[in-house]
Length: 257
Image 1 (cartoon, rainbow, N blue to C red):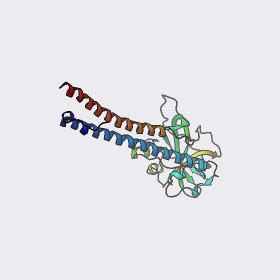
Image 2 (cartoon, rainbow, N blue to C red):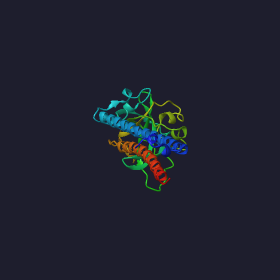
Image 3 (cartoon, rainbow, N blue to C red):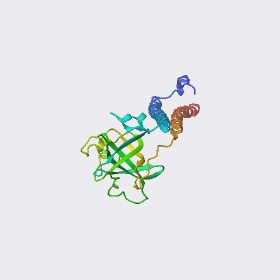
Image 4 (cartoon, rainbow, N blue to C red):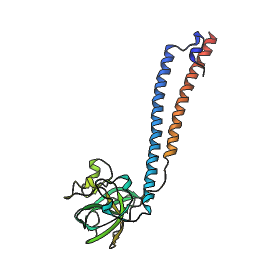
């Protein structure tokens, strides 16, 4: 594009045209900044997805550990999806339906219950998933846990993050699984994080399905990032085209004069 200042004096843009270009340039700069940030946000999510996949793979073939080797002050992302073993007795007085959950492509709910371990700790256990047919409401009450001492083998999970009204149970249901939120309504402290059941001994007919690890895919984050970066380039090119159009529109007027 030719520099507007190199045009003959009579064809130089007026102050109003310069103002129009300035406003357009500021608007386009704002769009480009937003698009680039969205692109890098998608790349960041891709890195997180790859890190999670690596965590799942690293624990996939590891031996089952005692829960005391993993549970401590705070369960981190790196602790997730390890398999642990814990023995104890379910507290049948406290069980909740966890609404709007998904598992292996199905939609439904989960059931969480505290477990009093044999060594005097209390750990929250996600007992499993139930698919909910379309149009059906959630049950009014969670199914009762098995009685007596049980041994749970399951995955370590970190607490879900959310507002108070999502992590604190109300009327037998809760939206997210968090030992912090559920710990506010039970009369004893819960360890940070929770366990999702893979195996239960002695076996019990509960109708609950084990929670499956996430699919080891990278999703569409990279293609979305490319799209946002492409949009930023289109915005810049569009600004150049508009300015060239303004300059070309002035030339016939000068020739007519």
